[in-house]
Amino acid sequence: AVIGASTGGTEALRVVLEALPPDAPGIAIVQHMPEYFTGQFAKRLDQSCRIEVKEAAPGDRLVPGRALIAPGNRHLVVRRTGALYVTDLVDGERVGHHRPSVDVLFHSAAEACGRNVMGVILTGMGADGARGMLEMRNAGAFNVAQDEATSVVYGMPRAAIALGAAGTIAGLDRMATTIVRGLRRVEAA
Image 1 (spheres, one colour):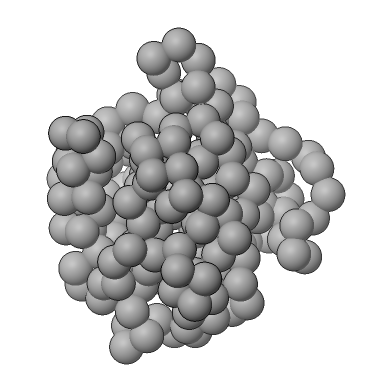
Image 2 (image 1 turned 180 degrees about the horizontal axis):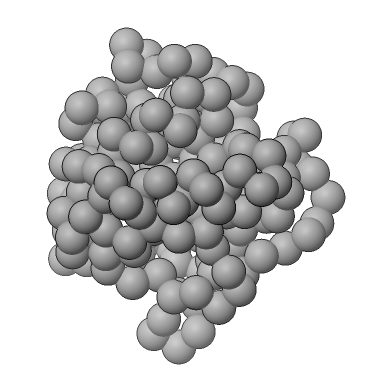
């Protein structure tokens, strides 16, 4: 799964990741956050979750039971190497004023994973991730957006829904279950 979040996302990610089972599918995450804060954020989540949570590094494998968070000021991308999916970090230009950018992660997931991935867009201001999520949907991915009622700021989910990029809308309380079910559907396809 690939997850994008911004304003309100640190709490939303905590709720989602803490609810995931230890064998949850591998996850790559972009949370808009300044440099140097993402490492501590990942460490805190790692202590409270049943899955491993760490700041992403080049070549990290996306494996069950692990979530990788983009370091501040670096784009996170997913690449396919044989049967494996690995992460890479890219220094490119800001995209929509963001580095890391959700769109960059989602675009890489659409290219590398096609229909073998799920996109999740959580609370956040603006529209980062909407276009990338549409690319994912066009590549056959199953996507979900957080609902308005549980979003701190409904900008990013609203933008994805408006583009027709999200196939499902779920509240924060149901997001972890939706992710696990959605990825089981992906694996069965």
